Image (cartoon, rainbow over all chains, first blue to last red; front, side, top):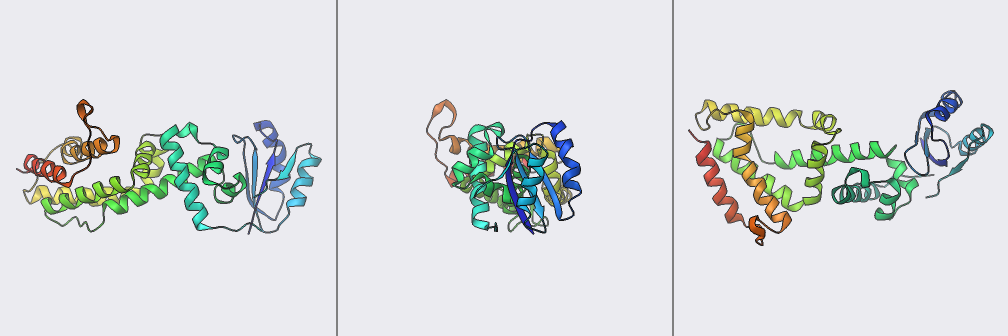
Length: 71
Length: 196
């Protein structure tokens, strides 16, 4: 299992609701959450695949910022 | 590929407790914690899903450690004197060796998360301690008291000495350093008060 961690700009309930269907339909995700209280609005995904590029592309397409949070 | 490292996780937990004890729950952010534990915020998120999850997991781990330290070599079938003596020794030992962790567990106990944490961890503990007290009463080694009164007499004196030591000062601002003889002396008086 991969734990993928990103910095985003998703912070409101409204925005969360908007991206929920995008993520819930992804069959390789085991679970995901966004820590909206953190300054980096960290998106954390447990996935069976390393689909970082796909996640970034999905969020960018929806109009959000998303980049991998470096170690 | 991100991998888990138990030492890193331990360092993160330790620093989280230190920050919370000195700055309070609101003083903990993932950024501050990352800096203090010398890891990146991303690393913290490998282990914990968010700030709340982190506090909960650290609290459960610490509470489990406290419970197992308190129950070490203890058996509810012991005589009241022997059992209470072991309880005092274990509790003093734990508090003196892990002051930050112990203070952190106390803070959790009085926080909104407290109930969740202690429901998970303390069930066995309460059963064992309850059995010990019931047996002691039946054997006429302990007088029957409301739980709060029992606890206030049986353990609060010990924690007062521990608190003096952790503050480095006692009443009237006198310097205070832990001394086993103080504990023994206090224990004798407590025992006398609780025996029929």
